[in-house]
Amino acid sequence: MSKTVAKYQQYAEYKDSGVEWLGEIPSHWQTKKLKFILLDLVRGPFGSALKKEFFLDSGFKVYEQKNCIRNDVTIGNSYISKKMFQELDRFSIRENDLLMSCSGTIGKVVRVPESFEQGIINQALLIMRLNKNIVDLNYFLHVFRSSDIQNQIKDNTQGGAMQNLVATDIFKSISITVPKIEEQTQIANFLDHETAKIDNLIEKQQQLIQLLKEKRQAVISNAVTKGLNPNVPMKDSGVEWLGEVPEHWTVSKFGYISQVVRGGSPRPAGDPTLFNGDYSPWVTVAEITKDDELYLTSTETFLTKKGSEQCRVFQAGTLLLSNSGATLGVPKILCINANANDGVVGFEDLRIDTVYAYFYLSVLTNDLRERVKQGSGQPNLNTDIVKAISITIPPVNEIKEIVADIKKKIDHFAKLMKSAESAIQLMQERRTALISAAVTGKIDVRNWQNPNNNNEAKTEFSA
Image 1 (cartoon, rainbow, N blue to C red):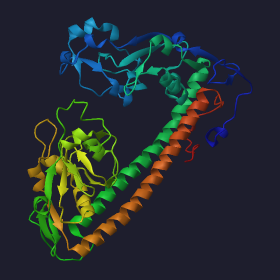
Image 2 (cartoon, rainbow, N blue to C red; image 1 turned 90 degrees about the vertical axis):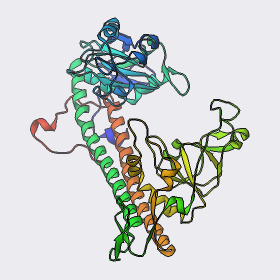
Image 3 (cartoon, rainbow, N blue to C red; image 1 turned 60 degrees about the vertical axis):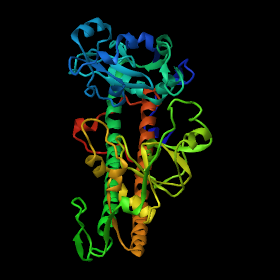
Image 4 (cartoon, one colour; image 1 turned 135 degrees about the vertical axis):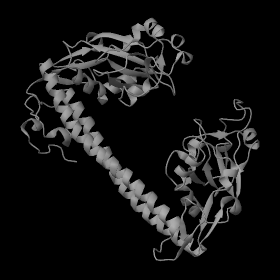
């Protein structure tokens, strides 16, 4: 038994549950298949019944996967007319319905609260309506979100990259533990309290990580715009957003210190003889923006020789920049010879330290995005805009000192963030173990009392 649950007592007597993955359960508990707990199970309408061209800016809401994934029924802005809502009334939601994602991301569930927008589910969701005489809703949510049940759901999916839930009859055969209602409520109250404490600790670690990222960014920004000596004389850079820079620095533009070249995609885009090959690494915006690492050492996809010959090959050591989409303005240093698509620009013949230029661009990402926003469409950086980006140029020896100082400090931040991430991982594992133990009867919490009811402030969980 893990340390997380070892401090809790077990039940006096156990019996075989009759369910292989579950093993033994308390002798007075039962197991039931979902079909005996549900009053109704409604799968969303077929795609032909609910097409995107039917959607309006207002009316009756259409609930989507993101409502389940984010555990929030308030988000989303897809609506249908009253007439269509009436035609699809079978798929309308009610208070205390549980909405579950059943395509792509499987098994995420959200509870419909007392106050909600009237509407229907789309084809990627299903509605579960529970028999409240058999199961407590909060208890069921803890059971359903437990790793044990989620693994059963995953076992009942099919498909490749886009997973789908198989027939609802198979889904309804999933078994869950069912103590008496009063005990279910007690278990739910216990888990609500204990998981809230763990979630609070996790949130604090996440806030710490965000703070460390902001401090890291501030360190980089100050180093590449003000230098390492706070007492050095300053001058106006001539660039509004840049402000003052050290007096002995110069300010140039990327177009003057490099050849700014945009990548290109083989055509036609759907030609199988060009893509999914094994000849040349293929860099996309997603490859550049997937992490905070300085270097891009590999790609997930490759072009064929024919595809590679149609577009430019960037050499190892080239500084790249994403130039389109929501993640516009993210830099990366290429460590391999590779093709890049037209969502990427490269700085060839760069006449300044590449790592320094990387750090400099990394602090401008948000600024670049704001500067090129046009209307509601996705922003894009053409090569003229990139060439016009100003850059500070310290003396060569000072650049080396700045790069070394930044690397040392961000390595320190990285260690602190890794420690926080490890703490989060540990707490998530403990949370999972505690839920599993409580809903499978491995621990007995019938005598547990909420310390908040007695105004006690003691902490029963220690990270």
